[in-house]
Image (cartoon, rainbow, N blue to C red; front, side, top):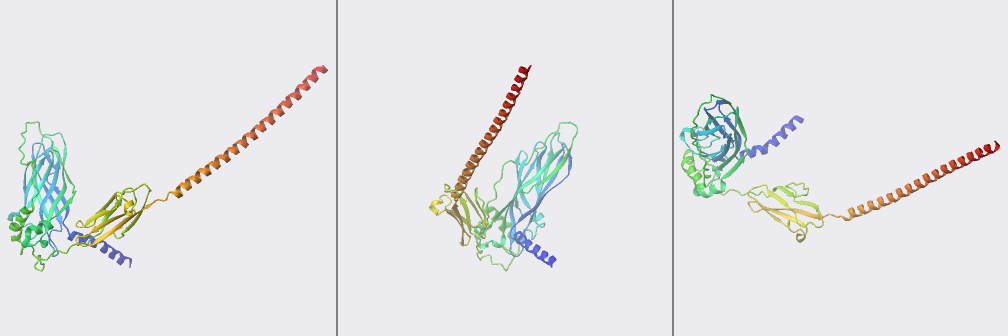
Length: 392
């Protein structure tokens, strides 16, 4: 029984991740391949690849990657990029001082497009860059990939009769701080004069392709390669408007300097404030990026009955209101407690003073008594001495 329960639990936990993978494109990894060792004055070819999941026609979606950017970092004192080549993507590279950006837009090149699903849906991008190894005393150097940016579109969501407008509404962007490293050992050569080659990498950043550039690629390079434009799924009517989202939940609700246990399904919250507080710093983030929010009353609590309302409006117009009630903290009890404590401390001090005074009196009395005894003994001895002297 326990085993069946655990299996069901695992399935339930995996369902959301499965749905998430279908509803978007994700970067599953990046890689740098090439020699792990080279020499000063030689050239070394390194291949950079970015891999994706969720690309292709699944029936519900047909995600197509239109444009990619990612960054490469290396030690400019050691490696100089000189030339590069690419596969099915029209690629440019720009940058300087060891920081370079790769820009790639789908080219539809027949020589490479067979590597892609239906010759359109490419799951990865590969670029090979040739680096010249400069004169250096370093024995090892590092090359890094990071900050991948992807622009993609669901072909099933496009309206072929109004392609440009539907593209503006459906092009999505996905960013991830993907970090991949490769180390290369550097062997020294005899100290001879080496002429460095000229780099063909520019330092002018190209513009991010505009919608019309992606539209042209869709019309001229993508559409001819799939069975119907803009989708290969005949059962889907692309002229039907997409159903608008009814998601009016918040994913984040915070009040600066106050503890708030947020649950998106709970609409009402309460915090305690001091009497002189009349504004709150409230942060609210809608769960759906197409939803909007409106925060009311945060800047003047007194005028809004000490309530802050966060109205979240879904894409389809449905509204949800979260309310934060700011209750003025009752400081009377605290003041009374403080007064009582002071009174108690005074009584304790007075009692301690009386005890100390009694103690002093007792010690003084005992001291006087001892001195009196000593005085009597001395007097008694003096009389005995005087009597003895007279007898003599």
